[in-house]
Amino acid sequence: NILTISIGIADGNKVGLAGSTANNLMGMDVGAQIRGGSDVIAGGNVLVDASNDDTAAVIAGALGAGGSVAGIGISIVTNDISGDTTALISENSIVDARGAFAGITVDSGKLANGYNVNRPDAPTVTPPDLAETQITVQGLAVVATSHQSMAANAVTLGISTGAASLGLALVPVINTMG
Image 1 (cartoon, rainbow, N blue to C red):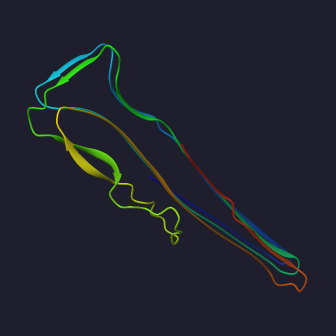
Image 2 (cartoon, rainbow, N blue to C red):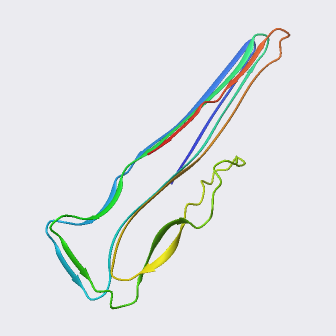
Image 3 (cartoon, helix red, strand yellow):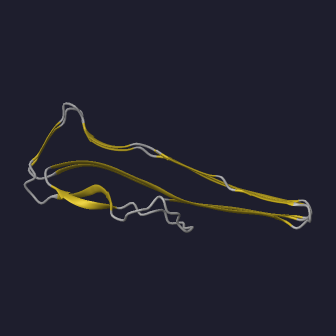
């Protein structure tokens, strides 16, 4: 979990120029495997489980206050979350999981709390809850889950008090997940 806060403030008699930038670059590969010609025999259950939960929350803001000429505020937010999550049993490996005992609980692939991506949310530093419902399986379970979420908040204000002056605010936010 990463929380990034970036704030810039400037006040000038003629020109006020303020900027802030918040950047998060996260790359994480997670893997679980049975490999190398392994021979696994279990009277109960076998779980090959790889799980990755990346979250980033960002707050960026800038206030540029200028007198007679210009007030300019610029906030830039860039988030890049990448990585691979894999769970596997490789070639030439044998797994005999007889499931004779109570089952094991694993992620189902379905979100426990639905999330509407078409509805804007109020500003928050809490990324969406991506918890999954659980299911119980017996025998062999090979599960890979990756939950990547972010909350990006940027506020910028550019003000100027002159009669023929410029107030400008610029707020680019770039989020990349993959």
